[in-house]
Length: 362
Image (cartoon, rainbow, N blue to C red; front, side, top):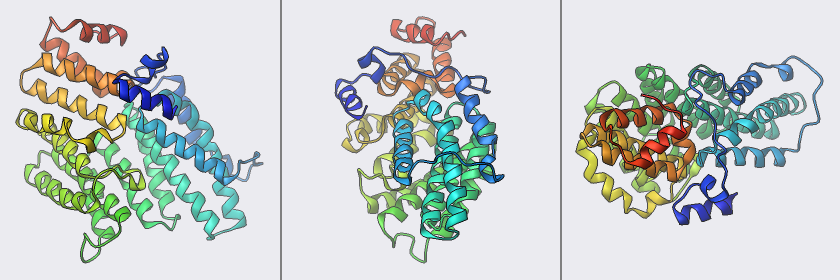
């Protein structure tokens, strides 16, 4: 799959276009999709904590590879594949944690397993949030934070605050998300916040970015700008092309977040000049497909704010080519597409065809 993804990236098309498949999850807002309900069921089962009979649990190395593959699916917006894998992965990691706690309480193996538990819950929270299933996303994100207290890895523990803050923001509670990110960042930082290894700086900088997103949700332009400027300084210290602690933090991510916050503040038209510059940045093209596609959806929103639905539609088509799952599975993208069609009844045929593919009516 990694080779197929690279070929698709070079050709500028989606994996499904290259392979001739349409393996995407349906519109999932509010649940009801079988794959989503299977994840919900896995999160609500607690056999491993109730002293049941454990199944044959894979070796830790096998579980680590499965978690790594789940991160890869999230980065590619391969949401259906990820949703299908998550129920077994959640159950397996719970049994692993129970077994390591019983045989090695407080030991290195238990801490290693707990870090994997954190990651699985963070992945589940993020994909469910993107699909608009916020009640289950909140549950998974909260589980990740609770697990982090037992992991012994302060940076993974701090990273666990990010999906929870995002869920809170999407649930209409940006102030709680802002406070969570700012508090966690301050606790993580030392006397000199820029004095630390790249992994720490990446988590710290990402917390600042997500605090900025929450501040934009509150309409706080001053705090948003200040947090973005702080994050930009941290990103310069980290440099481009890294993915410490699965954050993809660097200058390009800061630039993307500037666009997202401007759109959230209702002034997306003011940063359209930055959009063209970012498109020529090699660091931007090194980011995962899902992040680039989500950014293009924000670009579409910016063009709508600039009263240019035709260019907004083209940005959505570019997002669909970049990571099909971002457009075809995320409620936020469907909302933008509907807005494009309402603003431009004579939209380009490709935009109309995309709406028909999604069974979107306005």
